[in-house]
Image (tube, rainbow, N blue to C red):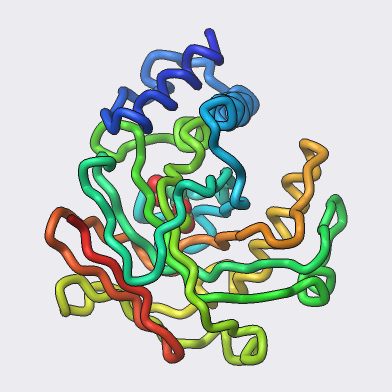
Length: 256
Ligand code: OOG
Ligand code: MG
C-alpha cells in the first residue's frame, strides 16, 4: 500500500471536487494507524500547496452524527484557513462535491493545552471564547459512504466552517441546553442542543487535546476548535439558503 499515493488521490479529489472510491474497498488491510498517517500526509500536501492551519475539528461526537454516517467512533481532523466562510456569505457549489452542513459549537483557547491528562477544568480555565458555528462536510468518497478508516484518511470530510461573533463564554451554564434550529429555505429541518455532543461540547476539546498528545501535538491559543455536529447534517444544493438559529445569533449562507 502506498500511503503517499492515497493522500495525493484524496487531495486531488478535494481540489478537483471529484469523488473517489473508498480506500477500504481495495486496501483490505488499511488500519487506523495507516488512516491517521494518510491524514497527516494530506495535511503536509495542503501546506506545500500554500494552505495553513486554522485549528482542529472533532467529529462523530453526537449520536445523531454517528447514525448519520454509520460510523460510531469520534474522530479528529485538521481545519484549514481557506475553509473559512464569512458570516452571511456565499458557498460556491462549483468547488464542492456533495456538501452537507451541520450546527456546531466552536471553541478558542487563550493558552496552550497539551495532553495527556488534560481535564475539563483545564479546558474551562483556558477558554477565550465559545461561539455558535457551522461546519460544511463534503466527503471525498463516492455517495458519501465510508468506513471509520476511510473518513480519517479523508481528513474527516472537512471542507468549510463559519464561526459566529457572539461569545457564549458568559452563558456557559446555559450552553448545553440552548435550543438551536437549522432551516433550509425557511423550513426547519433539524433542531437540537449542544448537550447532544458528548453531554457537553467542552468534553470534545478534552478529547482533542488528549488525542493530539499521541502525536506530540497541542492546541494553541487562537486556533479554532470545532467540537462536532449537534444534529444530523443537512445536504444542500445550488440556490438553497441555510440558516442556523441560536438564541443569540443566526448563522446563514446561500449556496450559489
Ligand atoms: C464525517 C465528519 C463528522 C461531525 O461533526 O460529526 C463531523 C462526516 O460526517 O462526513 O464533522
Ligand atoms: Mg462536523
